[in-house]
Image (cartoon, rainbow, N blue to C red; front, side, top):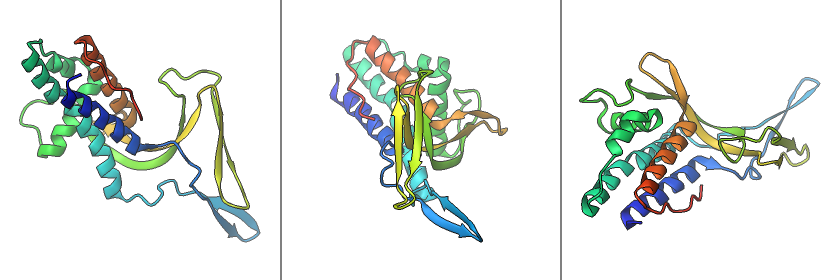
Length: 210
């Protein structure tokens, strides 16, 4: 693969890694008492501030959206047809990432949004999520979290691909407040679409590390 393109994909993988932490062993719960009741609380934000969360989320958005310009340069240099604009126009997830990127860069859009709306990111937080290792979750997958009352440590036990992760995520909404999906899901599907486009041009996609 052309090195700038390969580096761009590696940067996206790194950005995904920054937004997902699959090791929850460092998390500690807090013991609380209310009268004769014994309680515990777990703060999954792990001290990340709003500014930290914004940086992580928009690094991911920017890394994916900027693949388009790098691919355009490669196509021009190699005499290949650039189909990136068509991908933005026909793939909803790619378009949402593109519009989120432009709105963050410019504060507004000087042309109609490619997704058909002005997406905005709401309720950004780091939380514990459980999922399968792929989009097609096995119906037999499972995850359980145990809490050690003596140490406050959390431990996950999983089977058939089920995993628990700390994920920086939020809801993408249109300008009317209608939910369009979760940021992580939209970004992963947009990246998958760009990787498929690169592969169709005979470009080897670097192995995903996130």
